[in-house]
Image: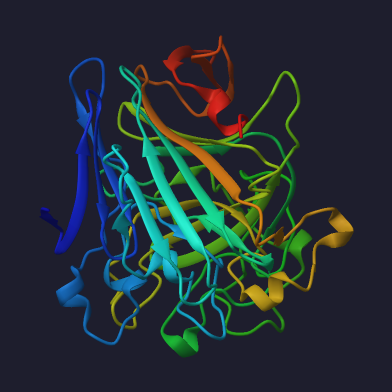
Length: 382
């Protein structure tokens, strides 16, 4: 069992993928081999190792990297932030022949969570499944991939999603100067276009006198890295799936390739952008967590406590922020996370649609298109 970035990991190598999952917290990173032989590593690893982070932090922060499953999503009264799945030990499922079939018996939510990471020949894709058994009541949850843009100049990365029907900055101060944190965006402001999101007139120090949204300057969240020294959070909700568009998607064009995720919006109604560019200065951040971007698929009220998510604050907009789990029924949640090469000057992803059962057509805002091998039906067939 190799130690990677200071953490023992369960690993598996396929023909196009090399996956590592931390035994503590189940944080996933992966290297992908593109058809031209390039090996790309889109996922972030924190600037610290678990030993460097100090003993008083939750495992979530000491091991912070890549993608991890959260149940509940956000803080909770009687357990670690983002729940045991993001903090506690995972074991290989007894008797399973699959190398990436992991199991956890949670102590906070008192249920069983099974994590399966699948690969397919010649697909630069991960087929991610979490199956929850024995859980009762209404809970928030989510997937928390963090990408690393640190090798890109400012504004060179392009970040887009499938069409959205609602979006807002965080309702409160996401980054509070009293905690050595700083943000750029105007709090509690709805917006319709990721390219025009209101900036606060000054880095806000309170929720009072932060300016009227229609009078504010805006910033473009589709271009990253941007706004150094600031950490922000926005939440957006995609349009529902249709026959022509049977999944929702999020995409980031990086250095000659793109990373994308696919979801069933009925399972993951919202997407969070955690924009982390050195805005936190308390330990372990110390201003070092820069040019990272979380593109998180969730059923939650932003990153708030699960008790807040249960208040249904977005019910008037038809946006669920929890899901009802039944102890006698398994709930399966699936995502695809994948990469594909793109030509020079590809621009930003404008659409991702099926091009057959095992293929996608990915088009850009500059009129270019590529085809990517992907079993997109995975997010629908459960």
